[in-house]
Image 1 (cartoon, one colour):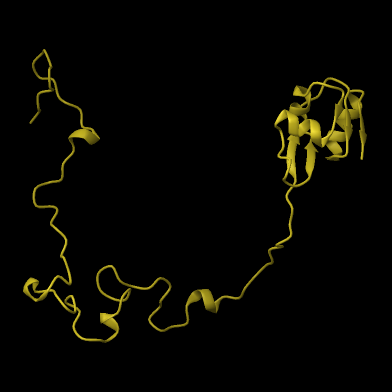
Image 2: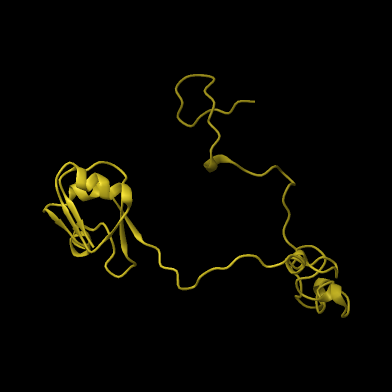
Length: 164
């Protein structure tokens, strides 16, 4: 059955379903059971869990229970599988600058300081590396930065040079 839209002038207009007019079906929701609220509630003291035992403990068995990765006493898969690989805690990732970005910087000389002023790299982060993404038309001098082989070729082809 179609509902009339509020303020609709013509007959047969149907209001669109949206978050503002959704409601749950009658009887589909019920109030939660309020546990541990005194002896008169019927679920006071032990909250319907009985006395002691694993099923009375928090985070185990029953609705909402179950400990993550617990496999019924079997050795969990996270402990059965061997450890693999290594993560170097001292790894430093280079900040990447594209050749297209170098074209935006005014001036023939490009250093870490000019990149920081232009907002292309952070002053207090790791080293900077220029990659060959894009093209460069003007001749520039790149000083004190790491440069990929492809970027070096493009800079030299444009009449610039790379100084390490």
